Length: 147
Image (cartoon, rainbow, N blue to C red; front, side, top):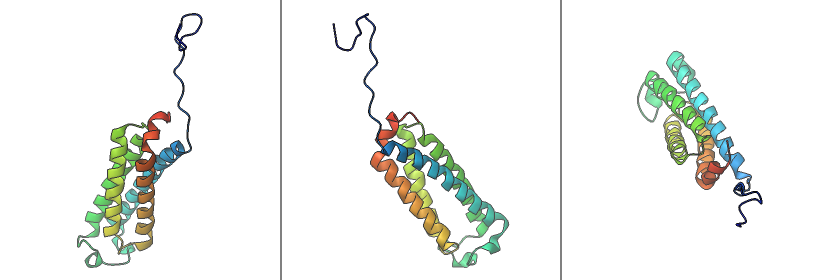
């Protein structure tokens, strides 16, 4: 009799994979992406409804477009980033790829928006880099995490 079957002939459960501390980082990355998506959406709504809030006029931006365009871009990106964060909890490879790509796009958009709101953009870029690190370095552990 094989060592994987019990004495009554039933098949025993496969050995479980040990949980590591990095599985929590994947969940943390998912939550950060949901938070980043919310922040993008807030920045987008501010740009749409109160464009005099920012430090420079539209001519002072790296990409010379009006704040209404930036508002819609941030709002759309916010929704995509938040959805990518939710999908990261599935542990699927496609979710990790989408999470990395959206975090990269978020970092580039924030770099382009940096002159309008420097501290906000710098913080968002730092969080994007943290998400990219967590997902690329330890994303394979998400598939066994059970999140």
